[in-house]
Image 1 (cartoon, rainbow, N blue to C red):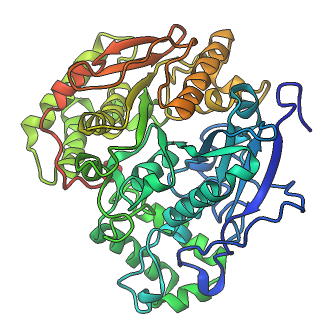
Image 2: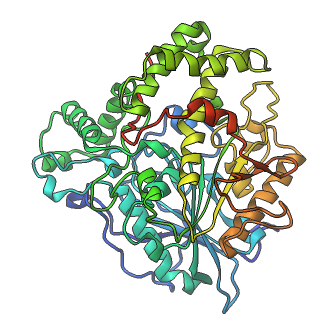
Image 3: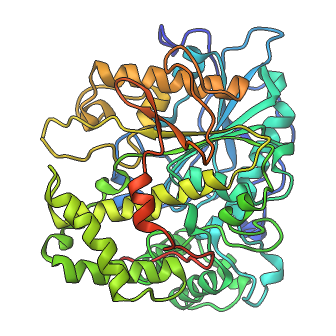
Length: 512
């Protein structure tokens, strides 16, 4: 039922946009569903994609329960406050979850409050994850009947549905903004490489993306080989003959097996030279989406949600070995002990004089910058225009009652986007220690996001003037209790990492 804050918002749930990808359609790019029948009721979320309901990724933060799961998952949801004849800005959400979990029915992502407060149409799209969405079978017998990047194709098909039908629900098809966080943001980065994206969307808001995780065929083939070995089959037809649960169980086992060699996202978009044509960094540098308006950023303490207590006992030499392993993946070759030691020492020395002095604190900062923040700066620095480019840094720090210092961790911005704090045990409000300052930051963020969706400029009364990003100033909006523009907030870290990246970068496994 509508609440006072969401009254007037029309909610349509579980609208099919693709034909069920089951049977012979498993591992195939989705086909469009018949046009919606507006005479029927769309009053229940569709099932989420097949995924495990347990494990760290499924339970790391509140409000992520995706509800029932099924292979028949290609549906979307719409929240529209539009009156007859209106054409409101449209914001289309892609959920995160490391490409292995997630669903649009998760309570955090309910769009009614955002739609009502900001007078925008909000859409959320289900897409396939894990082996169902991102298994590359091109080299397997029968691979000509399978498509790589099925989950990315789902996302594109859902966006095309929005373009074609959102005017019927009060949305403006010429003002569609796709937005997402973590794996959803990474999804957008990979969609930037696909042909003709700007025929479907006008703008993108990209929150804490993993820029450098796009796979090449050598990596995706290793994942496929491990899955075939785990299932004991050798052809695409035999994989299709497995039950969904059998495939899911094998996927879970393979993800655990590959953690230390490929990392936390073995099922991920891969360069296929047809749809995902290159890596996001290469696509942006080539100017392939220069006409798309882009708002992109990160949090202050991305990786503090995932501390590695082993780092506390490593010492400088041990941590330098971890850093060297990571840099080898990042640079495509071994940079040597001296380079790794110098970078490690910079972070350990800074940590030693701070309120976060431990080895695990320093290791979290190394990963925050190397994996999350500096790759985003590389994207920002590569933009050419004419599309507008804006940068943000989300800096509001969690105030947990248990005293645990998680800072502005990866995914902390989610309840701010959807006004999804709630209260009581198990809520986002409890998890981050939300207070009046958090609610104010949330209102400011949502106002800026909606302003960007409407006009291509996030400036608004709540945050003030927000200048575009350029390499002369690197102007970045710091979203905190008092929003403020700061120039080049990562200048020191950029210097530490200068020269420590190469286009051959591949995902790094968890260090041993």
